View 1 (cartoon, rainbow, N blue to C red):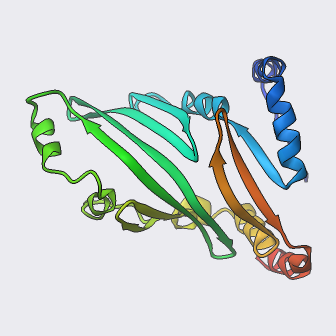
View 2: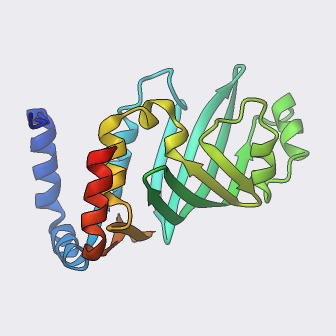
Length: 214
């Protein structure tokens, strides 16, 4: 049975209005598509942050382009103390296989600011912000999907998330994509993120066999 995705009318109207006011995006997206690339507006990422339910994430989350990556700034509430956190995030590699979906990122220009003279501010002064990987390794409840953390390098495996790993559709898709489609690079420009793909049709028969067996 085909899967039908219904897009709310107000979302469709907003998307069309955005495209009409950003004609350059259509040109760039078409050019990138001809080179096996997908173009994602940074405005879309900003909109997605507004869908996070209140109380389920940071009090404030802002995303902006910081080529070749993105700048992410957030306000989090830690035991009643508001802390401003920000960093540049660059995707170094994406590796897809039937058993893993690994994303490697670099975190740079990390900043953490707490109210002056607060206990949090004094604690932050003792932290080496140039080595965020060490901070992650000290987390008492480090998430299982964070498989590596060293220096400014972090590696996540999305298949370590039980809800994703247990999704049969996702597993079949990964089996079908493995070896056929790969992500060459993910880079941000002034107002968009461009995902460049590699395609090897010779691997398609084997991938389809794995997908139906998954």
